[in-house]
Image (cartoon, rainbow, N blue to C red; front, side, top):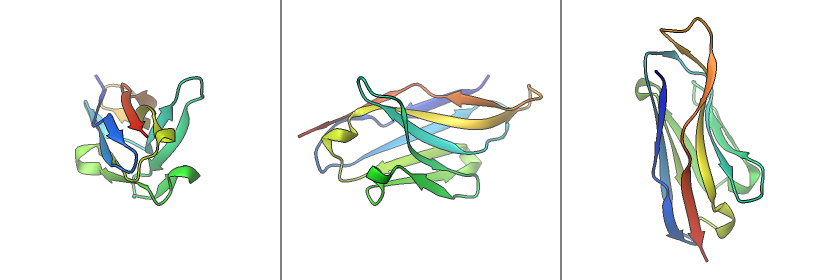
Length: 122
């Protein structure tokens, strides 16, 4: 059974930093792109950052130069280092693992972790 466990959300003042982590457990054979999405109240879920298995990152324009995504393939884990946080970054953040193949299933699926609240006060 695949599980994505997310940690690291919380409350921080504007200008502060937080690090989110997402670890995938289960009989994992391979995972394609992993990423972080966020959803603020009354807004659509948006991609914040993603990273390919070979470490190529992609960022939402508004977080470039402030957020850094990293990946540890051996641990099936990604991190999101968020610096210079702004109130507009307040949202529930979700982890996603794409095209995940397990030893139990003959096909790839996308999986989502539980959300973690990030609140940035002004």
